[in-house]
Image 1: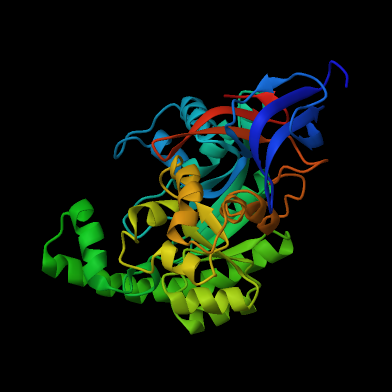
Image 2 (image 1 turned 60 degrees about the vertical axis):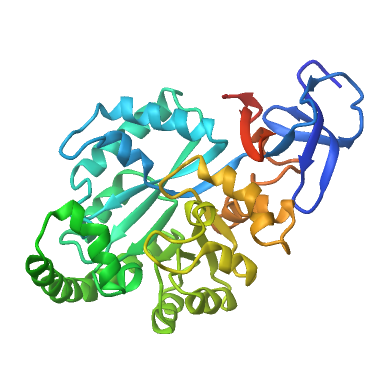
Amino acid sequence: MTDRITILQNATIILSDDILHGWVAVEDGRIVDIGEGRPPERGLDLEGDYLIPGLIELHTDHLESHYVPRPKVRWHPLGAVLAYDAQIASSGITTVFDSLRAGVDVDGGGLGAELIELAGAVDEARRHNLLRAEHLTHLRCEIPSPGVVEMVEDFVACYPVGLISLMDHTPGQRQFRDLTKYQVYYSGKMGKSLAEFESMVAEKQRSNGDRAAVNRPALVAIAQSRSIPLASHDDTTLEEVEQSIREGVALAEFPTTLEAAKASHAEGITVMMGAPNLIRGGSHSGNVAAETLAREGVLDILSSDYVPASLLMAAFDLPHRAPEMTLPDAIRTVTKSPASATGLRDRGEISVGKRADLVRVHIKSDTPVVRQVWRRGERII
């Protein structure tokens, strides 16, 4: 071994299908050797802690929370990006798809024209080597939103996109098929009376349906023309799954029913659920629980969604929730499986030749704690 090689020893290594107590050697940002027991040369002693691949996050909208910390408040774009990046890295995430909203959500949220500005701040941080994690882009397209197609066209002309998802938060369908849940979720934000709420729902259902019929095929065409992986969002019925299949969807984000999840999985569509759903024991919108899908064998990927730290917690909790899953099975849902779903073949597992994106995890009171993080062999946490 040469001085250029870094050795991480005395580690409980989570391989893609096994657990090994031993060591990993890293050179020039890649894993060059893996062994059991003691290494040929002394390295960094991990004191028996877990060593897992760097987590890969496909859907987190947390960057928007840093940029818009309060309603109508905009923070410094670059400052927001750097704070968000630090949170992502400290959660053990080494590759993150920044989920940026194109179009206005049903609750009035969304960046509008500021979408390009925020993406520019991410690009600036990347160009100046200020980022700890690797940042890719996931465009969350609110289908019924006016101007969403033009917004996406402008974005893909300026920046690369690694994933496009098709979202429709129209009340009475998908995530909010249950209007009672929708009212509970949004009434506090909107401050509307029951009569005002019912009138708003009726108007949104009419106008959104008209726009979605035009916008959805246009957004699918953009993704297909640029070979961008496509994700459905909140599929609920078999009819919605069938539409996703026709559109060439590769990833089903947060299906709301077991029926939809099973149908997607049977067609080879990768199924992703939220880590907070698993940790909390259910969906905040009253939809199917991630634990149920795991027990049924149709959960492929976990996403931190709105709590970055939940990704690691859920991965280590998953074997307890679904005993038929081993710890390597669970870790794949946050590493190798999201890498495969988005074509990232160079990472996602501890294997010779793969990128040395690694996380040292200590367990304290049954809670996984990130102690060190490496990206391409360089320590970032």
